[in-house]
Amino acid sequence: MVELLTVLAVAGILAVFALPGFTSLTQSQQVKNAGYELYSALNLARSEAIKRDCDVMISPVLFPVNFPSPAHNEIGWAIATSANCASAATIRNEPQLKGVAITPAPAAGTPWTTYQRSGRTAAPFIPVLIDAYGVTTPTPYASCIKIELSGMPRIYKPVNGAC
Image 1 (cartoon, rainbow, N blue to C red):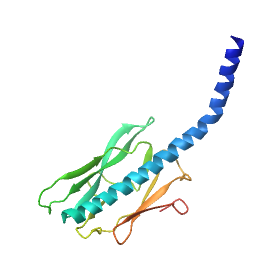
Image 2 (image 1 turned 180 degrees about the vertical axis):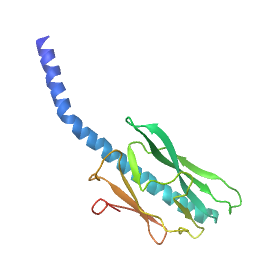
Image 3 (image 1 turned 135 degrees about the vertical axis):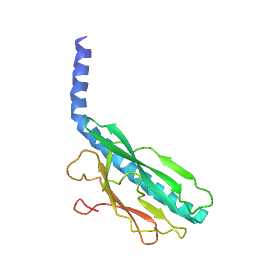
Protein backbone atom coordinates (compact mmCIF):
# COMPACT_ATOMS: atom_id res chain seq x y z
CA MET A 1 0.00 0.00 0.00
CA VAL A 2 2.87 2.38 0.83
CA GLU A 3 4.48 1.65 -2.55
CA LEU A 4 1.21 2.39 -4.37
CA LEU A 5 0.83 5.73 -2.55
CA THR A 6 4.44 6.61 -3.39
CA VAL A 7 3.87 5.89 -7.09
CA LEU A 8 0.68 7.99 -7.08
CA ALA A 9 2.46 10.88 -5.33
CA VAL A 10 5.31 10.83 -7.88
CA ALA A 11 2.81 10.66 -10.76
CA GLY A 12 0.91 13.64 -9.29
CA ILE A 13 4.08 15.71 -8.97
CA LEU A 14 5.05 14.93 -12.59
CA ALA A 15 1.55 15.89 -13.78
CA VAL A 16 1.80 19.26 -12.03
CA PHE A 17 5.05 20.02 -13.87
CA ALA A 18 3.68 18.82 -17.22
CA LEU A 19 0.38 20.77 -17.11
CA PRO A 20 1.73 24.15 -18.39
CA GLY A 21 3.30 22.37 -21.36
CA PHE A 22 -0.02 20.76 -22.25
CA THR A 23 -1.81 24.11 -22.01
CA SER A 24 0.67 25.64 -24.44
CA LEU A 25 0.37 22.64 -26.76
CA THR A 26 -3.44 22.84 -26.70
CA GLN A 27 -3.44 26.57 -27.45
CA SER A 28 -0.95 26.23 -30.30
CA GLN A 29 -3.00 23.44 -31.91
CA GLN A 30 -6.23 25.45 -31.58
CA VAL A 31 -4.61 28.46 -33.29
CA LYS A 32 -3.07 26.30 -36.01
CA ASN A 33 -6.36 24.50 -36.69
CA ALA A 34 -8.29 27.79 -36.77
CA GLY A 35 -5.84 29.23 -39.30
CA TYR A 36 -6.13 26.20 -41.56
CA GLU A 37 -9.93 26.17 -41.27
CA LEU A 38 -10.22 29.82 -42.29
CA TYR A 39 -7.67 29.32 -45.08
CA SER A 40 -9.69 26.35 -46.36
CA ALA A 41 -12.94 28.32 -46.19
CA LEU A 42 -11.45 31.19 -48.19
CA ASN A 43 -10.19 28.74 -50.83
CA LEU A 44 -13.61 27.07 -50.99
CA ALA A 45 -15.40 30.41 -51.39
CA ARG A 46 -13.01 31.40 -54.18
CA SER A 47 -13.37 28.12 -56.07
CA GLU A 48 -17.17 28.16 -55.71
CA ALA A 49 -17.32 31.71 -57.10
CA ILE A 50 -15.37 30.60 -60.15
CA LYS A 51 -17.32 27.36 -60.57
CA ARG A 52 -20.78 28.90 -60.14
CA ASP A 53 -19.88 32.04 -62.13
CA CYS A 54 -21.35 34.32 -59.46
CA ASP A 55 -20.34 36.14 -56.28
CA VAL A 56 -19.76 34.08 -53.13
CA MET A 57 -19.58 35.64 -49.66
CA ILE A 58 -17.90 34.41 -46.54
CA SER A 59 -19.57 35.98 -43.50
CA PRO A 60 -18.78 35.62 -39.79
CA VAL A 61 -21.26 33.99 -37.46
CA LEU A 62 -20.88 34.86 -33.79
CA PHE A 63 -21.64 32.32 -31.07
CA PRO A 64 -22.14 33.90 -27.63
CA VAL A 65 -20.67 31.63 -24.97
CA ASN A 66 -19.04 31.83 -21.55
CA PHE A 67 -15.33 31.02 -21.79
CA PRO A 68 -14.08 30.60 -19.12
CA SER A 69 -16.06 33.13 -17.13
CA PRO A 70 -16.70 36.43 -18.97
CA ALA A 71 -18.95 36.15 -22.01
CA HIS A 72 -17.34 36.71 -25.39
CA ASN A 73 -18.19 35.80 -28.93
CA GLU A 74 -16.54 32.86 -30.61
CA ILE A 75 -16.48 33.10 -34.37
CA GLY A 76 -17.56 30.68 -37.05
CA TRP A 77 -18.61 31.51 -40.60
CA ALA A 78 -21.05 30.82 -43.39
CA ILE A 79 -20.18 30.58 -47.08
CA ALA A 80 -23.11 31.48 -49.33
CA THR A 81 -23.85 32.66 -52.84
CA SER A 82 -24.99 36.24 -53.28
CA ALA A 83 -28.18 37.56 -54.83
CA ASN A 84 -26.67 37.67 -58.34
CA CYS A 85 -26.59 33.87 -58.59
CA ALA A 86 -29.19 31.83 -60.43
CA SER A 87 -30.05 30.10 -57.16
CA ALA A 88 -29.12 31.43 -53.74
CA ALA A 89 -27.57 28.73 -51.60
CA THR A 90 -25.59 28.25 -48.43
CA ILE A 91 -22.48 26.31 -49.37
CA ARG A 92 -21.12 25.61 -45.90
CA ASN A 93 -21.66 26.61 -42.27
CA GLU A 94 -18.59 26.33 -40.08
CA PRO A 95 -18.98 25.97 -36.30
CA GLN A 96 -17.23 28.31 -33.93
CA LEU A 97 -13.50 28.27 -33.42
CA LYS A 98 -13.12 27.38 -29.74
CA GLY A 99 -10.41 29.00 -27.68
CA VAL A 100 -9.16 31.39 -30.36
CA ALA A 101 -9.56 35.10 -30.97
CA ILE A 102 -9.65 36.72 -34.40
CA THR A 103 -8.48 40.34 -34.56
CA PRO A 104 -9.93 42.57 -35.86
CA ALA A 105 -13.17 40.93 -34.82
CA PRO A 106 -15.67 40.94 -37.66
CA ALA A 107 -19.13 42.41 -37.25
CA ALA A 108 -22.00 39.93 -37.37
CA GLY A 109 -23.83 39.93 -40.67
CA THR A 110 -21.11 41.86 -42.51
CA PRO A 111 -19.21 39.69 -44.98
CA TRP A 112 -15.49 39.29 -44.38
CA THR A 113 -15.09 39.24 -48.11
CA THR A 114 -16.97 38.56 -51.30
CA TYR A 115 -15.30 36.62 -54.08
CA GLN A 116 -16.32 37.68 -57.57
CA ARG A 117 -16.77 35.24 -60.44
CA SER A 118 -13.18 36.03 -61.50
CA GLY A 119 -11.84 34.56 -58.24
CA ARG A 120 -10.73 37.93 -56.88
CA THR A 121 -12.22 39.79 -53.96
CA ALA A 122 -14.67 42.64 -54.45
CA ALA A 123 -12.97 44.81 -51.80
CA PRO A 124 -9.63 44.66 -49.99
CA PHE A 125 -9.52 42.00 -47.27
CA ILE A 126 -8.16 43.26 -43.97
CA PRO A 127 -5.57 40.74 -42.69
CA VAL A 128 -6.69 38.98 -39.53
CA LEU A 129 -4.61 37.83 -36.58
CA ILE A 130 -5.52 34.46 -35.09
CA ASP A 131 -4.28 33.76 -31.58
CA ALA A 132 -5.28 32.05 -28.36
CA TYR A 133 -8.25 33.65 -26.62
CA GLY A 134 -7.54 35.67 -23.50
CA VAL A 135 -3.85 36.43 -24.06
CA THR A 136 -2.72 40.04 -23.72
CA THR A 137 0.35 39.82 -25.94
CA PRO A 138 0.64 37.71 -29.10
CA THR A 139 1.87 34.19 -28.49
CA PRO A 140 4.69 32.62 -30.54
CA TYR A 141 2.17 30.46 -32.40
CA ALA A 142 -0.10 33.32 -33.57
CA SER A 143 -0.74 33.48 -37.31
CA CYS A 144 -2.15 35.93 -39.84
CA ILE A 145 -4.26 35.37 -42.94
CA LYS A 146 -4.48 37.73 -45.86
CA ILE A 147 -5.74 37.50 -49.42
CA GLU A 148 -3.28 38.15 -52.23
CA LEU A 149 -4.19 40.25 -55.28
CA SER A 150 -4.81 37.02 -57.19
CA GLY A 151 -7.53 36.10 -54.68
CA MET A 152 -5.54 33.30 -53.05
CA PRO A 153 -5.37 33.34 -49.24
CA ARG A 154 -2.02 33.16 -47.49
CA ILE A 155 -1.07 32.24 -43.90
CA TYR A 156 2.00 33.90 -42.42
CA LYS A 157 3.60 34.72 -39.07
CA PRO A 158 2.86 38.17 -37.61
CA VAL A 159 5.66 40.72 -37.44
CA ASN A 160 6.01 42.42 -34.04
CA GLY A 161 2.62 41.01 -33.02
CA ALA A 162 0.67 42.55 -35.89
CA CYS A 163 -0.43 41.50 -39.34
